[in-house]
Picture 1 (cartoon, rainbow, N blue to C red):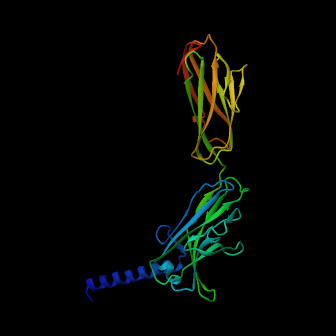
Picture 2 (cartoon, rainbow, N blue to C red):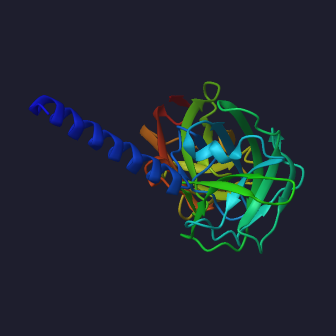
Length: 306
């Protein structure tokens, strides 16, 4: 036999061994690569206690991992406890929330599969099944707790036998609620010779969570003599401060706190007022935008420009 023939024989043998090894790896693997065969996403990876999250499945049945799932009587997409899935004790399924291909959605806390929804039978490679379901994070969930959402694709015969493919877990972390409230103060002079300034503090919630309450305190210059048209705001003459409660502010919305300040006849020069937010519920995540100032100028008390 020639040297070239012997080399060709060695190469052919190596190729055969490599192919066999690859087939063994594929047969022994039960883990799909997210984004290739299956993709699991969630609406919020840092949910707060009591928040509702949406979990989405998008699976294409292709590749050796799914070979055993073609033609089975029942196909399911769900969340699994195996391979680092869970713990799911702080998640509860929202009944009736399944969409897309998911139907007959059920939760079984004692089984390997925590949640599953049946999808139309897969009859050939390259078919796709997708859907969403909603879950509520327990109001008593521990802050900082990590829950691994582990997607599973399961196919069962009529007798209950079948195969499962487990995806790489997608972790979510329970976080404390926070609302970034910011304030912007503007001032408008009243009619000439009236010696008054109208103030408007715009309070905006930049999220991510709704704010349920806050306090707005405005430090006025010493020349102030009182307030009017103040709604629920109160004025303390000893400190020249106006205190106003701020009600609920939804994420992405703005509320306005307004009041009018009267200035005395001897008011001359710059009149600077500064509004500051405090006691924000839940905790304000950004203190940098919690204060805002507006300056007017008085020639005399009755003549003020802003």
